[in-house]
Length: 90
Image (cartoon, rainbow, N blue to C red; front, side, top):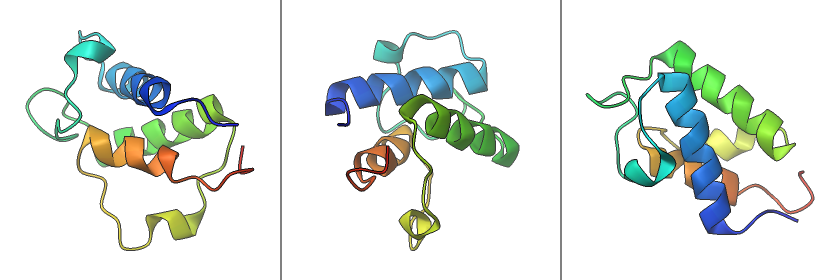
């Protein structure tokens, strides 16, 4: 069973902060913060690292169809991705 939405958000933010090497706590990172903005500066390779860490942390592969018609531009986009994983995918 997936953790509650608040726990998911905090875990995703921790992963993003680590990958971006930002000096922040998860509570300091707004959900609507752009991944490639002034604060985080996540590159395309960094995004790949974030997605890999998310798969490891949540114990689930992110299926390709989850990315169809979606752009990952903010922290909230990543949180929504995890929250939309099919039940049993973990």
